[in-house]
Length: 417
Image (cartoon, rainbow, N blue to C red):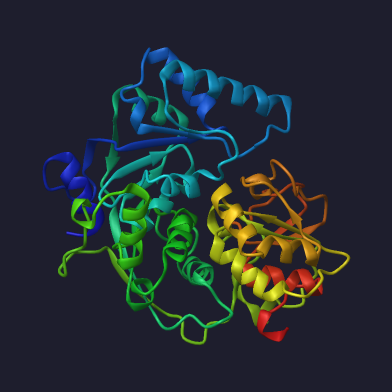
């Protein structure tokens, strides 16, 4: 059996098979300021009390601090629910983006089942958990019962080999995979990432890849925890490795597909408007003019992303016609970046530093694009109108490319600086 099948079998109490419908208990249910209010509205029609307030996490990240009357009202509804239901795992004061804060706070462990009212909940597969997004109505039922149903997904084994060169990052690997198989190439399937490149990849890069599993339609992305992941989880949870339920696929596990990707000599990959699978190599797209550059989001707002950007921006100035926005993914990352001098580097280069949050990724809060403007961004989606005006354009890349482009004013390969 593969990892996902083993986790679901353990929860179901019997050996599951792909296509089977199961109802299983949930270890953590997560929502944010955008999705909690509709879930609360549904929940209040079916129950008075949540099944377990210790297994619910609510984070404010999409519009924080509130930027409209509507978002302020949404957050008021959330705060009242948190108090009424005694939700202790609430992070509503700028702690950061949900998919960074949840693992930081030690709420993710291998072998767990985690659901969230946000499509990028698949991020936690980087820690060996079965983790997936769901709608507000489904989340309300989880709050009420502690259970949910799934159809056991088939799995695609994606083996990655080759060494990451200095100008690419895990973001390029996942963009390349999505470009190869398409935005619907893994619909309702498990994307299981493995191979030498994955085994040697750090925690943050793994989170980036699993985060974007949904962009190829996957039900969940998942990886076997490596040494770095286990150390991270032990540090965050206070548990010993022997206390963790580290699940690994059997050597004879069955997959619906097995795909191989060799990243040797890979160029930076750019997802061009208006689909995440419209991926081109840097040499095909460099020189394209842009108006805004964005480094942040639940995909690439982590410390390693900021470090990569500072190495490009050190002692340089951004182009006067460019806006460069930096949004650390969490308060902790923001503080670390300050202590390491990254924030000074960004400010000296002319960047705008924003508080941790989702902000411009969804065109909701800072950095919204006007008509005919374009942005190169480390975010995860470039759909039409995603970051503002329907006639604006978004290109997706790693943080090194974004930083280099901010200096030149056009999409630029960092190796050329």
